[in-house]
Length: 455
Image (cartoon, rainbow, N blue to C red; front, top):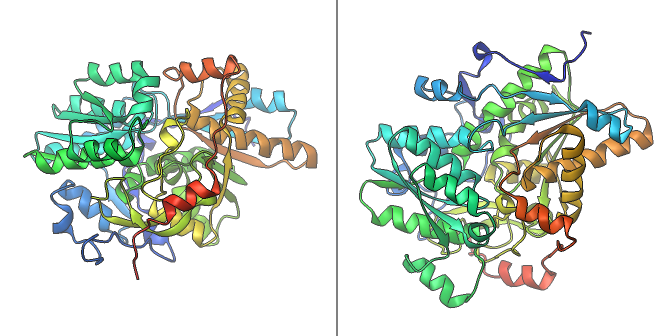
């Protein structure tokens, strides 16, 4: 076998020409979205006031395996894709492990994360439909940054509702959004009826993605010429993010590498779902025997401590019901630094795969996450985002197990983005002021008792 380089690059001709829809190969399809009033599966016409027409088609299609990527989106992708698959030789050496560690690096674009893969697609379809603008939510700010960049490219207005704790912790990411022309409002706010209601019920709340989603949907449905777009969770988003996995698969095949363990951080599920898509396809078909691990924060453990049930996708309870692993739509996580991993639920696709036993899940605390982030930064030269560092933590743990057992396993993880706008978090870690705030059983029970009754 040829010597594996530090970075495995694909050329532009190897950029995926179609998104892969994992649902087409799933044995059990994800449960449909339900109308909260009738509890019947949502139809396209019911979703039309909220989402773009083409995105609705992608959202509801469980059978089409591949969706051709429009040329305008491919042209945009070529500014930063294909992204490199990196062999972590220096991390392997530091750990003294026989394991081979690879990471797919998605931070090599202005938005600093994988989020741009779907943002440009959603902005494209909004422009094609003739809309004036879009609204959205953002947690840590990666999605808001990516969408503001994509909207600027297509000359669309962009209104972002940013979770209040992240708005305060990450002011520079907010300013990048404003540089690209977006308006940024801390959520919950007094600019929407739902925001006022949430603040009245939870005075002084630091917010959540569920709160921000409610506000963004309200504004979209009340503003002519606008639609709402989402950065994670939805089927359409995981579809767009499949470019990550397709490129990873192609890069590994160049050197006949088969992964034993694939690891991704999980908040709503977009990056994990995109990374694992072609590998999960082969696992379902019996062609690949590997472990696939979702890593979430202990402060927001929807997989590991949640319930698999229908729930509202937002705190204001105005969105459709989705069947997912959830902590309850009223759950507001502690103001930790895993900003993009603070959603109360998980993608319906990933939830179904987890329930069927194809996917593992584990949760980790933020102190141990930042220990891994620092260790990685010191040897691999990239300052990772807090979200990505959840995957790094478990990748390091698995590599240490290989050292102890002597097994030469191949580990692949997703490095979703960089942490250069997360220096407040790094400062607290270095100053010894970072704490793990984990919800109690009583807190989760209080949130879960409000789950909607769906027979």
